[in-house]
Image (cartoon, rainbow, N blue to C red):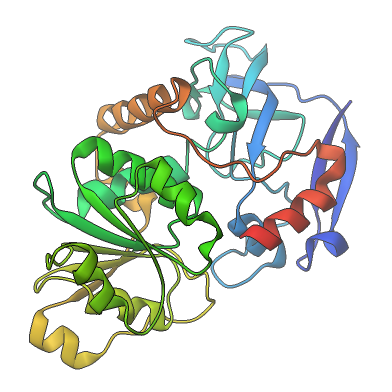
Length: 316
């Protein structure tokens, strides 16, 4: 028997989730069973349990979008994996459980390294990679600006941009982590506010960023757009405020500022399987050897799932 979180209806996590003792997973042909080592929790996990628009998945289900574990059982016909191998299960496969059954050809090999860090590979890290590589042509020394910079994706973006020679302006709502982001490699860290564009130009020596990266939405989208060089794009990949993105028409009209919505899955689907595998391999290597580091707010055993969801709600 193995434990799994189970959701039968939509609502607040404490009301609709239960910890169930289920029979051990038995792999079918072409499948593997993974014993989970760590699973990452995001604000998206809370929204999926609540069933908000865009996050309503068929029920019953087990929450959990990503994680890492080791193969414990092989189904008939599986090639390329052996018992004991470390693997990343498919994104969105319900990782808040002790054992997970998945198609082997949808899993990726995982390197050795800290499980808690590697558990963040399949969503946050490729999101940051796509944001940096797909929406602007950067030369060394160019600037980008992002809000929500304290998120796992924001922190990955700081580190990937620094490695590529791209300088970052990082916008926060709270001052407590400003020094922490500077130590991570952020070039400029600012608090959000109505005079953001003026302060950005002061900090960059008068050079406007070539890309805006927005995970807050609402009026924060417009404040990023005000900071950009003409002909630039604001890329939206989240809505932490719960509001719609807002941008002034005349700013778009006069300065050719564009707003684009980003789905890292869609961007990866435009690439060949070999290209996607190479991206994940490079990111996994960076996480395993410490070049990419996320801030882990807390860790919990599966039995303390209520506390884990409460922590995610506070920090999300």
